[in-house]
Each structure stands twice: as structure tokens, then as C-alpha cells.
Amino acid sequence: MTHPRLSVSAMCTHPWTFAEDLALWDELEVRNAGLILQKLEDHGLPDALAALRRRGIAGTSVITHNFDLAAPETWDTTRAFVNRAIDVAAEIGGVPYFTPGAGDGRSTDELAVVLAQAVEPCLAYAEARGVRIAIEPTLRVDRSFVNTLAGGITVARRAGIGVITDLGNCWREPDLHGVIRSAGGDIAVVQIADAVPGTLGRAVPGDGELDLAAFVRAALDTGYPGAVEIEIVGPRVDEEGHSSATRRAVERTHKLLQEVVG
Image 1 (cartoon, rainbow, N blue to C red):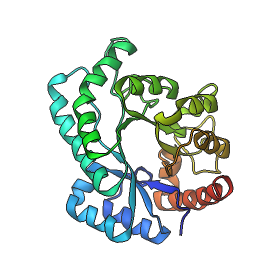
Image 2 (image 1 turned 135 degrees about the vertical axis):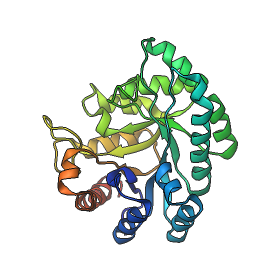
Image 3 (image 1 turned 45 degrees about the vertical axis):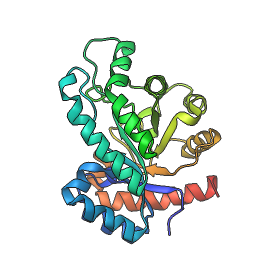
Image 4 (image 1 turned 90 degrees about the vertical axis):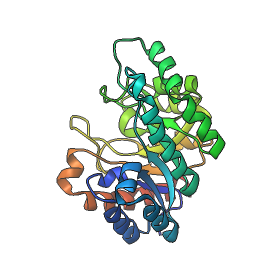
């Protein structure tokens, strides 16, 4: 059995089907999982949710679509997808989240206002269903106009939603642990990966040079009550193989959480 606060994101095996994810989670005795709405729908949403319930697997996050901030005419379609992720979270657990959306030449402040407008109906729907939603600031400029955790916290607060604290996106950030502690209750989900400076992508925890224990402790210092979700992607994972990399990540993160959390 894995540590009760360990979660495995379906992004670790992103090319796989949901059925393949389930088979690995069964073998590793995973009881918390980060979900991808598109995978669930490709499998057949009712069957996917039933399979999770039978196994007692709780969702910790649900990846959904982001808004095209330059195309308000598309927002209703995106809202419908986000709302389906909210329905999943209401049934199985988790925080639906999406990247903030690419910049289009407007200032960060202007885009933050636009994002808040785009997500407002989804926020109201989430609150009615007892679900929290969040954004994930990312280094990918094609997906996010805000590329730091500190900036993401500011934008999320403006929209009244949470922020995903993903070490794979923010490990280079100055005073990272101070930024995390300042986030307080704005942290919706904590995600973990390692990194090898000078190489692309993420690494299995323990393969790189990041102080993972200090990162987890900083998140716990905020009173964060949730799971620590493994999210490893990139060339190193692809080369090793998603099954092998995920197995090693679970083993090492289990040990890390035993040491840090108890």
C-alpha cells in the first residue's frame, strides 16, 4: 500500500489509455490519482468513474481545457468542458485545473481580468457543487501568460480560485519556499518531480538535484491538507519508459512522505 498522501498523476503515463493507467495503479496499490478528463471520456465516463469507485481510488486533480483568452466566442465550449471536470470532482474527488491561457500582447493585469471573466461561471458552478478549481502557472508560454508560481498566486487570487504548486514548473524560482509559504490556503494541489539542471523535462524523484523534502515541508507549513501528486513528464521519462519511471517515482515518493509526513 502506498502512503495515504501519495498520488500519481495520469500525466506520468500520458500516452496510455485510462485502462492502462488503472492496471498500473492496481499493481502499485495507488489509492489517489490525478485524472485527465479527456482520458476518462475516451474510455467512457460512467465506466471510468465506476472503475475508480470499485477500487477506492480518489481523485486529487482533474486536468481540463484552458481558455483561449483572445477568443471569447469559444468560452462557452470551454466552460462546458470545465464543468464536466467539476462534475467528475464532485463525484470522485479532486481539483479541476487548467493552465491560464497564452498571452496575446495584453498586459498581465489585463489578462488576469479577462481570465477572471472567462472562469467566473465555472467558479459559481464549482462552488454550488462543493468543488474547488485552480490554475497551473507553467513555463510553457503557449499555454500560460504567467510563468511563475508567485505570479500564478496573484492571478488566481484575482479570479477567486486556487493555484497548482508544481515543483516541475517552479523549481528555478527565487525564494521558492518563501513563495509557497506566502501562498497559504491558495494552494490547491501540490505536485512533485525532480530535475537535472542542464537537461530537458522532469526526472524521477531522487534522480535529480532538487531538495524535495524541503519543498514538501514548505507546502505542509501552509496547512496544506492534501496529497502530494507525482507528475513526471519529458524526454527522460520517455526514454526510460513510463511504467519503469512511474514505478520508481512511487517507491521513492512513498519513502519521502514516510520521512517528512510520517
